[in-house]
Image: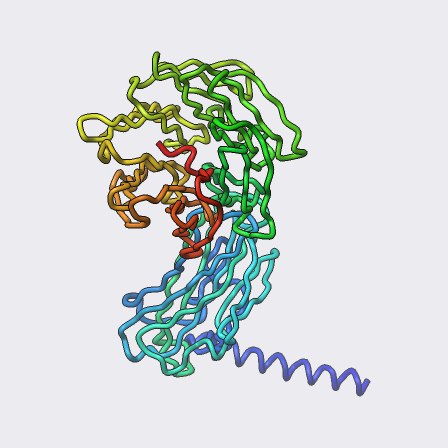
Length: 477
């Protein structure tokens, strides 16, 4: 009995204590301070679907200051790591402590993973439903720092295409008084789309990156520096002198195949990347211009030729096995097929050097025909997806100045960037695998490759010999 009475007394004491706390909490927001942590909030306060935000614990001004998630890739590449930056800005000098929490979701499921970069400013915590969060530490609150604060960390994209990924973040711009009031809570989001439908051209090893490579006409040798790594160089002899480079992914394995077109008889010779066996077939005639591309959207390059004498396009469709014939262009035109409307299919297109200008005529497969003037007649067409929106941008390189001019597919505004010099050979491609074309040139005088990578910075690689033809230049016209 005594033991029972003792338990009863203890239960009553606890009940009164809890009731007192509840009454205290009911009078103002001080109770919320109990779950506000300077060394990092509990998981699940980013404002993502099904979550609260830091406003659940803090309250204060609702205007002033900014909070931004920066450097999220426009299109992620599965398995690739990216540096993400979260930044606060507020001119109010009474705010001198900072915090954040962020997660990345595909729908309502965790997408990818986070990694700290050192310095002890961020930490990773797990939450419900398999979600992970990255947030500030105590040191990462930047106590007594005014004006701004930011954190940098790594996000590794999911191993496969999981669709659009959204970054959800909540930030606290705090006055550091140890109370819940007077703090500015802001939420922010950023989005990263699935891998671009515009595949990296001349990707011989399937890592979603254009590879440096040359074709040596005399002995018909191929030298490919896969992903810029000298230890992974592929060297082989395939074809005969006078062949035209027509590399593409003809077998659909995600790797470009070594391939030649023989102008004398219109034969295609394709070396399978899977096992280095080859097959050959006739398609085209002398005087044709080979224009291989994925015209039917099955992720396989289709053998195709443009016949200037009749302005006919002959496309051997890999899906149906039939031949599509399209009349488009004039005899003076330069064929520049690419996926200009982002539907996963290459569009029949030409660049027309006439009257001192370059006219672009595009027969888009879903968005209708497009015609415009962009560039001079002596420019070289280098279309590609430079902005990462999944659509090829009309673009040219000017040999006289080394300038690149890109017409954005999003709004038809343009930008120009100098990269290269007179005598260089343009070799555009996605060399860093971020879903965006990179400006690049091959310099025959010293066989250096200069690559202006959009994510990884400028790269200089010496590869090739005098007289070599850079493989990525084979589609420049």
